Amino acid sequence: DQWRNFLQLAQRELDARLYVLLSDDYHCRGRLADGVLELFAQNAFAKGILEKDSDRLRVLAERQVGRPVRLQSSEGGGPVAQASPIDELMRFENVTFTGYILDC
Image (cartoon, rainbow, N blue to C red):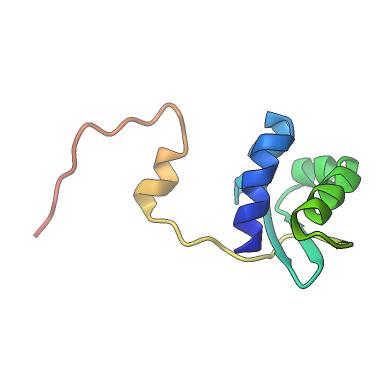
């Protein structure tokens, strides 16, 4: 999946602020395929950051795929990652799990 590979490269190459925004579906969703980097800002905060850093993101995507990339951005929408409710809670640093209760 080119988007996941793009996120791995972003983690190494970009500052933490931008990487965290890109990797959090609550702020940004994305897709990289067929020479197009699509970014879907989920809120005004994300939109502002993505607009400011659009050239950096396009250049990084071009490095990954080895050819020119067209950047498309919009508000809302985009692919939705399938995560379990537990995974969604675990993304918050202040949430700790000490055990599970199974209801059979």
